[in-house]
Amino acid sequence: MATPMFRWCCPGRRWVFARIGGGSRHGRGVPTGSTSGGKRGQSSVAQQPLITAQKPRKGEREWAAVVGLEIHAQIASNSKLFSGSQVDFAAPPNSLVSFFDASLPGTLPVLNRRCVEAAVMTGLALDCHINRKSLFDRKHYFYADLPAGYQITQQRLPIAVNGSLAYSVCVGKRWSQMVTRTVRVKQIQLEQDSGKSLHDNLRSQTLIDLNRAGVGLLEVVLEPDMSCGEEAAAAIRELQLILQALGTSQANMAEGQLRVDANISVHHSGEPLGVRTEVKNLNSARFLAKAIDYEIQRQISELENGGKILNETRSFDYKLGFMPEPNLPPLLLYDLGSLPTGADPQQVIDIDQLREQLPELPRVTREKLVRQYGMLPEHSFALLNEVGLLEFFQNVIKETRAEPKKVTSWVLNTFLGFLKQQNLAVSESPVTPSALAELLDLLDRKAISSSAAKQVFEELWRSKGKTPAQMVAEKKLELMQDAEALEQLCRSTLEAHPQVVTDVKKGNPRAINKLIGLVRRATLGRADPMVIKEVLERQLSS
Image (tube, rainbow, N blue to C red; front, side, top):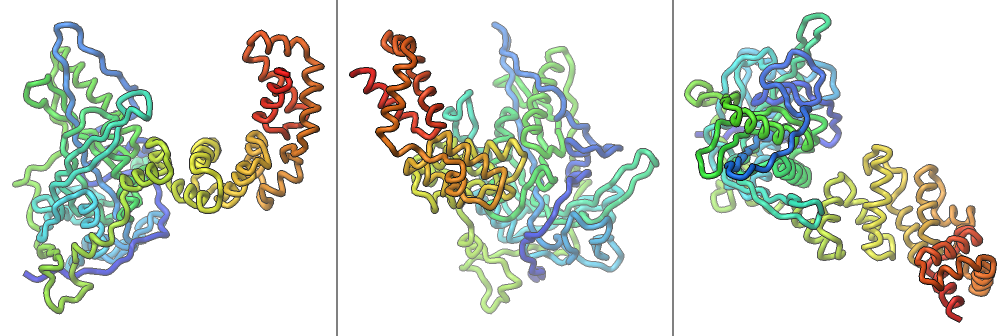
């Protein structure tokens, strides 16, 4: 059978996304946090209070939970999976709908090459087996925002299978108590997204927006290898970083670009697995963890009180719900050994070529940061978990003479703290890497004190146009370089506070700090506390 024709489409970089109110075709409920009315499917439990697991009393059998995930990630592509319609979620409703998207008779799907490459790269990054031949299926059901009455997907023979995802989860209260765990990846498949239904309860009507209909999705199915909400959330965060590193999806959960369905069951250890339920369309890692833990406790409580768990998963029987897609031939992929002679490079996908293009994955980046800069593993996680923070850190490192540990501390504590307070992204920061590097240089050569550096940073955050050196000069924040003057100030302070001197000699540890504070006040904060302490201790011992 002939190889399907591809459309060439580069990954989009200019999109503006809005929160999606509908959800993927696998989960018809309204995503957590949505204000849309008229829900379909499962009601969300993510906003219910989290109930902590109780330890079994003596003689009671322990419960074990089993959690599997289905993740739907929007592919970073300029156009849709099977049509040339543009992808732009800021566009007016129904302004990006082709004849094929509207399912007009006589229209045929044309596969988007970019989406296929994104699926292959994701599969390679997750150590999956890439199927040289995969098939498309029709999943039949009716909803108003699905014009064709079916979704094109890859249920029978997906593009990638049998992979793994390693993630780190904290097993205690400290970051240092982290362990690495692995969840199996069952399959990765390409499929269409649906349109969006907008429910207007005031007018008792539902409006349909088909701009999203046909947008390419990657469905990543994780085996039920997890046992709690925190494990699931950690796995999702790691997958999110991988997708962003690859550029296959922007994976912004807040904007609906990554949605998760969780399959949950409980059973007694050593007994068969219990009946599962499904919580759908969770678009926050925090809500995912809460929803899973809540559902685990709900099922345990129900069973302990003599109830039964109903299988509430919205699934479709293979024989009833799927049929081969007649308008798309099998998707054939090649490697260097099987590439047809004289094949048009634009019409074939070379797996080996895509493997060579894979960027550095987050796990490798974290290991390199720990090895290269001697930072703690938890610091490497923090740098990668905030979009743009690693690049900011690396730019500061390039421009400053300060030690990497000092840079790490300032970036993760001071800089990131200010971002969180103002609810800003790294790209919105008023402080540039060059400005922070210059400030750290002043601190490194002891031109200013730590407190003065923080004062300058606050000023940099509030006002633009001046360098740290200019601010230090204007506010006269330079450290005192006159050793004799500092000696005299320390001696005068000791003479003026004999009681504090007595307390120091009696061994009161707080007394020396009071003397340091008095000297710093006299110097208007321009003396290094460590230098002051050395001078005071020398004078007290003489």
